Length: 466
Image 1 (cartoon, one colour):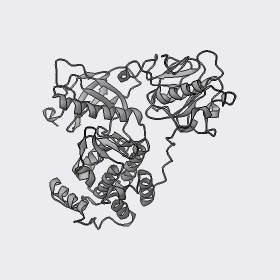
Image 2 (cartoon, one colour):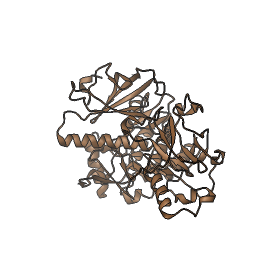
Image 3 (cartoon, rainbow, N blue to C red):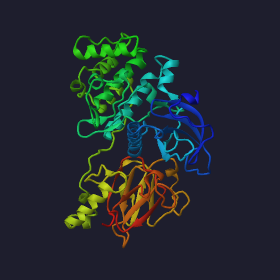
């Protein structure tokens, strides 16, 4: 791959943060991805990664706004979403290279390194034997995205990444959009072969195009037809011809004719995904689609994701305090959990949740699974480095924290708990002076997004002073 043809050309050996750029992996209209190796002794980071460069350099003001919006969307998605079917982001950096105007100021996402993409696999092996299993994993990724309140907006083979173990993960989130009730607003870009009829000719407001979760459902239907039959579901020798067929389909002038190789439950699944209108597609959300795909392949049912609707925090306070907080104090705790900490405590439940009871009074406990499950690390004091401190929490070197219980209600003085991205109470580089999160005393629940703290300290209050 010639560097001159890339959206962002980065010299071999260029250093950004702890990383040294190696060979290019791929490029799209808005960014380029390079292989990279770690060039420092910081073993909290992997030895190899993929660097995605999103340019913000020599552009017109309008281009710059578009590029910054795409970078912001991808950063927001990575920071707030973590799942086994979503490519992992280790950190985000900004390039400082005044001698290279095109590169200076570029946003760099340090991502988990994949071995390839579904696009390259299909080019080499149409109808791969592992196709049904990969479709299950793609559907799991959609389920995780939609459950967290996001629409991917650009599901296609190039954005399905294949890992060293052969599993699939979703990547490329610069067209993602966050749901606002039943819909969201996405940028005015899309790949026409994977876009539903209503999106291709939608009106564009100053916020972008209005889109719904059914956009991803349609794209999955197209992808499933391609993976299982080696052909696109709508005929046409070119993208323009297929777009014309799509227009006829929307008008009712063309009936869907799926490949005869698509049989049994897969034919029903793809037919429903490619329903003519979004109202018809709305009957099939990512959860029901995942269950149908699992049944079609005989795959064991994926575990149910934690509920994303928070309950009132007063119900989570220790018994002696429940019902006796003044309204102002209750409001302060609610504000702390809802605003402070780059996310929120989610899935709070009135009944005792599994595993939290392991956390002793006066301590804070972090867990490797939701609802207090999995491995646990607990502290009664501050810790400047979880990996080498008095209480070593080795599993956090490679795995995120998924739930927390601040059982420090009996502590005197500092009762709330702030946690940080790096050892030494250092914030995530892209977050400036903000800590990664903060949990008030007496609160327990699941963490949304990717949380990999490596230090913490007790503070008087999560709510900053006025």
